[in-house]
Length: 200
Image (cartoon, rainbow, N blue to C red; front, side, top):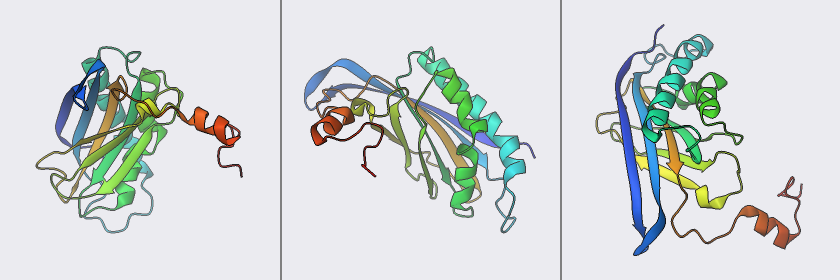
């Protein structure tokens, strides 16, 4: 079954002033989203989601990655990245998860930006204009707190009850005036091992 894409959204946000002070480097946030028909909506409980995952996830991964890279200009410029999906009220949370928690989706983005970190994620259920929250982290350093960011956006008419909004996010730059250090500083001060931060 081919994925049905109703619309796409590209959003660019630039933060020039934070806390009343001009940013030494503006933070630019990018969002690429697609509103798609939920391939499992109206079918009751579906045990095997793989056929639709295999058909839809690569298409969405390729499309949204291209939108981000075209907007930013280069995968090398992307500093932080993440993904999200919001399923409409006739769907299961598993349906949102199915389209983004597969290498068939995420690897398009990961390879395009040459990332080492895992893709931060959020999967939720909601109606039209539901918040789309895309958590971001540094693409190569999971402990770099300056790049712990969240893009919040929405699509006024999506998701409909039988739709899913799938999105990728990116940043060029970190939080302006970041001053809380990174997790390695905490680990050193607490005498913890970087490879085993919870000491378990």
